[in-house]
Image 1: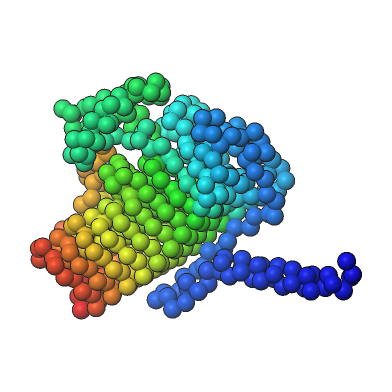
Image 2: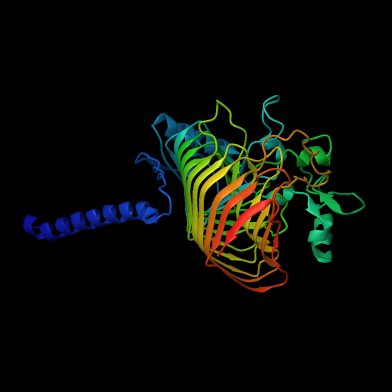
Length: 466
């Protein structure tokens, strides 16, 4: 072929490459979300992943749903780490595995037909003796940087092998199905544990109650910098689904989180003590809290403490105990959080602020606006300062007598909320002799078809409604 005849092809290829590069940049440019925020937020930085791609099949993995691929994942991640990082592709198939540990500069990429399925064999998740009373999460990353989980595939935690089930939350047919799996009934038949299952999978604790306390999250990221989770479906976790912890620069974009509505502790997205976090375009249908902010006691070994510079926008929550939630732990504080343009359809509560003595901290610069809600089971907006955790199968935690770590829900501004059908619009109760709920404004909101009047304790709360 004559050289000149190649010219148009070369030019077109160059143009296509430039357009492709520009499109890629546009898809990863999140600055437009930060326009016109009611308080200035620091933006997260995207992770940097080297341009090296390998397939899990290169390391002997098989997507046949029966081959255990834990070792293949370890080898693949070790190989990429030795090369400085890169993309680990999971192609179409059902990839059975034990726990996976991500390292710095690694992208775990699941193609659309890929289903990452975590083994029901609980012994695979045991942490070496003396290090933890729980077990390894399905996917974990600790003290690393530049990590991502991307693609259109499914990550399934096989949580029914771990979770207890309350009789009151299932139908007769479902209850029979659980009993048919084996397990054991406790508390006069009101609670079922996955214990001594007919599958022959061995238990890893001395009692069903002890084993229940060991169950862990599906994705847990601790003390990490620059995390992206994009496009994937995360479902059926033993406990919490997506849980970044003491980390910075977290972006969660366009993921789906789902589990049965009655899944015990089935939180969808929990942000615990993170700075610079963006959650957008995601869909939640879960058994506990939907989009939840938590903050524990500050520790000098943590990368960061408290929740700060959080933007939550354009998300949909179907079933959840709360659409957007702060608490129950807020000890190290919540500062500069914006929630806007979200939909809650069928949640138990809409905006939920919950804490108690021994769990509380102070909030500031919280702005929530343009939230649409339908079919809310209880309150559209609730402030609760007497929250007590009650794990399945055990009594509520002992009441904290020392009046420390008092909840302080303050400087919270809610506007342009529309809710149709709920038990009531607003419920708010503080603690006597403490200033726990104050500086709250609720403006330009519409609540229709409420079953009860507002329940606001004016003696313990300071709320301005316009």
